[in-house]
Image 1 (cartoon, helix red, strand yellow):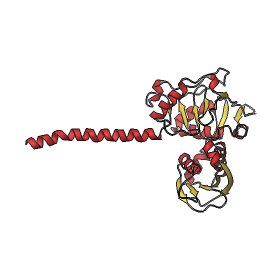
Image 2 (cartoon, helix red, strand yellow):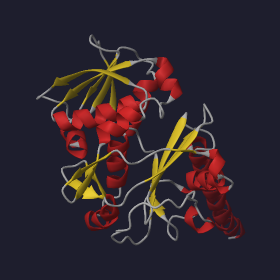
Image 3 (cartoon, one colour):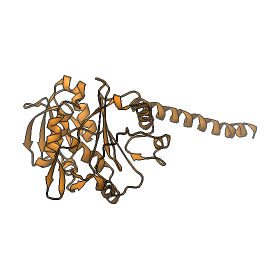
Length: 300
């Protein structure tokens, strides 16, 4: 009986030990994948709200950019949603319950990849146009904790990193960029994605991807989704050399490269589009992206 009692008493200790080891392992893994350890050459953020703003931090060149959107300007929402006023995007996202719309829409509008986006817990329709008042978006201590703070796609450790990154930033730390490449059509103000992309081409390159110099061919089903993806990739510094229609298409999108050791560019493409890796011969480019139905619909 005494031996049995000792064994029973040891069970909670063993459980606590395994639980502690699991928590330590999970934290170590999360930390190794966070911005504290892995930072891109350039980090792009969207703060959506009454005065929506775009921030871009250059870790390789120490050049940061900041711009403010006009709530009355209309941007295209990939996924077949059409154009919406920026000030109304938040309410639309609340109705659709698809926060990823922020990332796709502003990535398309700015011709780059938006790494992280933040938005209020409760959205309303913002009608006030952009003002000349300057401010730098911040994350408050409460925003670090997702359930009580501002919503977004950044995890706890990345929020903590961004909190400290933004904490001491001042006006002189940023170069202001104009978010006014618009076209007036009767009562509508259209944000011109192509004009913005051409005007600021090269500003938001990922240095390592640009220097690697890999070329990309896109095999697509929807030409519009292929064009949006092309603008985003070229805005990141990746050269898209060919667009080819592919009615067959794979069951899951593929990033094809003729090497078992993936390049930085191939890894980046797999990461942002959630594609599978495939080793096969390529002819027209260094890398091929085969777009499946799901990816095509997301960016159409």
